Image: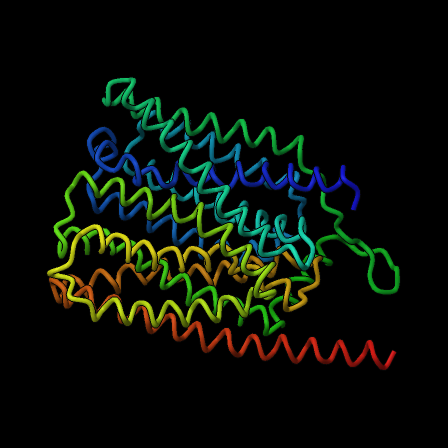
Length: 428
């Protein structure tokens, strides 16, 4: 690869990172503006929850369509369409529509961001890097998104404060999010190239692109390794969902001051993403040389670390020590989250069905978002206090051990496949 091609590869990755760091800001408006949403959009806790449920339902059902869409149409069209679509819907949100309008908006956010954009982004990142660069590519994607997340979120908060923290201020922040997303969509159109979608079969006969895409869907669904990778992601994401409960845990058990809650939340969600991404990518590409091996080891470390954490005398410990320990555990999880799509390269998924493979991984891998928070939350409601949190942490250990077992099976499949390929090369 020439220096110019290498430079263009990293420029394209930056463009993808910019999109990945902004497209979810409007759908995650509650993260920074929960109380203003209640006050100025006249929403109750239940109504905000319903909007998120609509988002999750569209995501889950829509990702089945993504298996076809992601390989049928070029990223040059899909990525700008998604970003501009989210931005335009955001402009409608800035008019402060009624509750039904809010539900429709969050459904559209999910359609553009989760169904159309995300699997295509993952496919684009996979195809940008060689087999030896997958850890770095996905690691930089996660870290870069953390940086963009932080800059854009704090800029919106700054606008909100500057405009007086009223209804007009919330409207200004929403318009800012929308404008940035649309601008990056336009930039993406000019910076990304068209995908080459194969329209000939193995014998060189011309066939329709629809037929090629459908053939790829069937091939991906019939590839068991893709489902095993998806189950590994499922396990890690189930543990990741549990990180949310470190905030109430530190507040309830350690008495963490309200002034520290916001700072801890920012570090927990954005700071760890920036650190975990490059660390995970570096360890995968330079040290362990295998994303699956790394995930397997990290899942075991996570289970052991959480087991030790449960046994600590939390009610007599210093809040800063508690914060440090929970952030340390979060860093392990974020380092896994940064690279948990990288094994798709290790199982030798044909590059022409990358989109279908990533869509399947999204469907199963992200499915814990539909039930994990409910499970963890019900544990805390049924058993208030330290014991309830211990139940949550033990469940996180169980998911870590499940992931360890699944990644062990995956590693055996990969080693077997590599040995067969090696023998074929020797015999040839």
